[in-house]
Amino acid sequence: MQTKALEFEQYDQLQDDACAQRILAAKQSLGKRAVILAHHYQRADVYRHADLTGDSLKLSFLAGQTDADYLVFCGVHFMAEVADMLSSPEQIAILPDMSAGCSMADMASLSKVERAWQELSEIFDPDEIITPVTYINSAADLKAFCGTHEGIVCTSSNAGKVLEWAFSQREKVLFFPDQHLGRWSGHQLGIPLEEMAVWNFDEPMGGLTPEQIKKAKILLWKGHCSVHQMFQPQHIIRFRNQHPDGIVISHPECSFEVCKLSDYVGSTEYIIKTIAAAKSGTRWLVGTELNLVSRITEEFKSQDKIVQFMSPMVCMCSTMARIDPQHLAWTLENLVNGNVVNQIRVPPEEAGLAKLALDRMLKIS
Ligand code: 13P
Ligand code: SF4
Image (cartoon, rainbow, N blue to C red):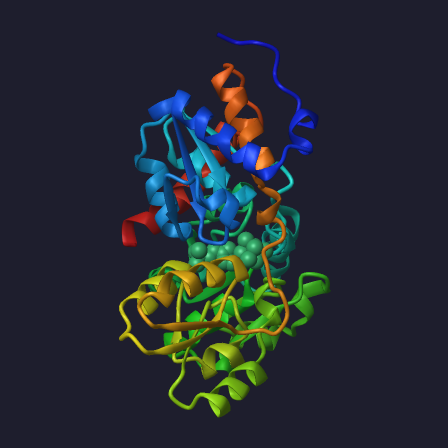
């Protein structure tokens, strides 16, 4: 039964404890009709309510497999878009706060990528020469661009495999929006740094000469994650001086220098699994978002593992943190009342094209 939608203002001042109780009650009344998915960076007071958790790749698979009516996505906007595209048309994806975006995803827009493609066509036919690869941290219209131009999506856990596939199709790659993931993954495949050029989308021709473009195997979009750029080589050097037996693990959105100095580099899921599988008594320095590191610091204490955050600064995904218990309670109680708020709906034509690029990725993952 549908009633008038509840306004968020009624929830804004709600105390966290009261929110937690109301979330639990709403979940119970919705039963299997709603599933809460949460990314590993989600704040603890929301993460504790999740039914399914994971990195971007795992959450994409899970979104495609659940048969709940409502997929309440506690992550950022592009993740809820992926959930919408990979679930069936009757299922409804919801983002509890519409302002939970990804600042890296916002660094590439369809108009800027189309302009780059147009500029590249002055040198060669990009559709013949280049496979466009978009990191999953991008808007649906960029995934649709990759679908249209025989390109593909990647996540931080399959970027290497995806690049191999991309090079099996064409001789060059345009990688957007994260230059760091592109550079690290290219380096892992043995591509020399001199054959990777940064495409500065604010300058004509990406700020590159035709010779630089012809020489490049990978054109790296000049985007980055503001959270991961806070981790610096000196943080690792200081840790190694203090703890010569310590182990360093970083997310590939960190700079090339940080990845190079790390013992392990991988996605959020990889980071958790690697530390979980380590011997007790080990000490870890972790270069990724603070909510995740704080959670595993607590979790692995009982196994006598010391897990430290890489930066002395607070590096949180502040946009993901906008999904707070108040927004989650508001979303769920509206569903209990038969009202859908904050639905994420990718237009069908765009979703169809984006799915081509997503399905190529899922097939090789
Ligand atoms: P993962 O795919 O490793 O979860 O990373 C997503 C992300 O946005 C990291 O900043
Ligand atoms: Fe985007 Fe960075 Fe947040 Fe990941 S941590 S969702 S890349 S802003």
